[in-house]
Length: 238
Image 1 (cartoon, one colour):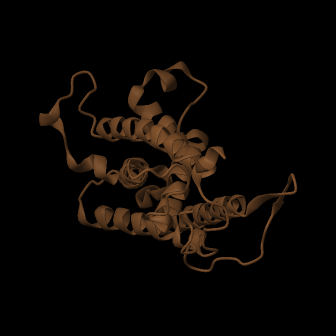
Image 2 (tube, one colour; image 1 turned 180 degrees about the horizontal axis):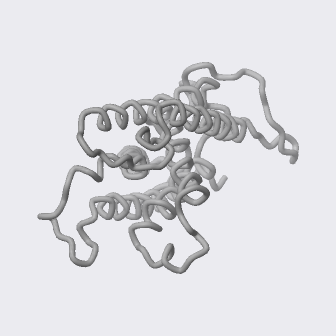
Image 3 (cartoon, one colour; image 1 turned 180 degrees about the vertical axis):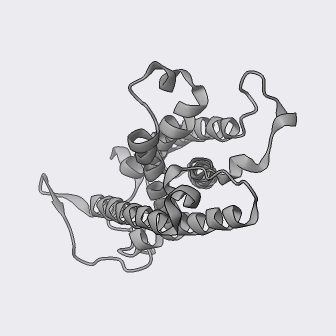
């Protein structure tokens, strides 16, 4: 079975880690014309896009290391179940990065969008490759039904982090229009937060439902029996 082939997973994850590493480097802004390491400032840490790409790189390295270890040990089929909950949370996180930028912030139908290597690396290529890893190589029926709700923790922590920066730093420029309390007020921002929480939740449960799709007698169906509440089964490596 394609999805269980560890060698296929290994090759794919080597490429994923390379693409993700490039995206992470480009978030620092040190490779653009006229910029250098001496001009690096802390402000790259205020962007959700950048933070979500750091999660992608970290999780990608962990699952690549586990896959490589198992291939080296002689295993040829199986699934990686290291940091499974964190991987699911990061998948939702980077999926929102991809969709929010393309729908609300970016201009994907312009030539400039595709000319910017950093832009397409951390907004398109790295996110899509990480999301595809979930669709291609995640073992079925192992994601907790609570995983989509846990996926709200990181973005809500980011909102709090942004509010703290805004309150602590004079003249702070909010990274996104929907978090700008100077323009929208806290009420307007919280309305946007509510919308995005709903989006996160819906996307999370769509990913969870995908994990429940199984092939039974040549037919695809959503299996809602024996739902895992918190942890993957102990035999998930098989």
